[in-house]
Image (cartoon, rainbow, N blue to C red; front, top):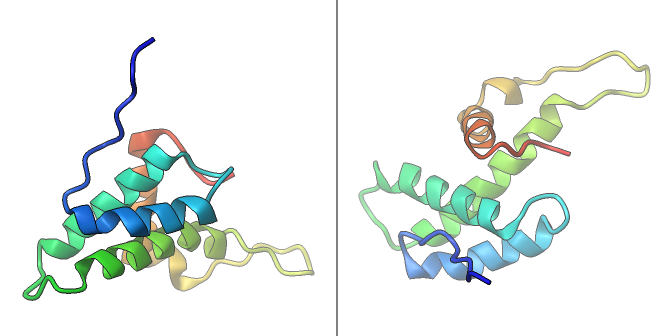
Length: 108
């Protein structure tokens, strides 16, 4: 039996955020997918950050927004007609679609 190693996080301070988000998304996404999502969010934010003090928390929040963005796009009101909000064009929605196409996991 081979041991599976989780993806390496770019910053050890991301681990608590990954754990919180993994619990929130349990049953929808694997821990590995959540780690990749948080790491990718962190790297996107860190690329333009001037201050890195709160990047861990911001990456967790950005990752959560990326997960929630498709749900806003797929919302259907009581009348049954489709409703598309501006979430489809937000950076969070675009980056979630890119990540989910790379990992092969989408919304359930």
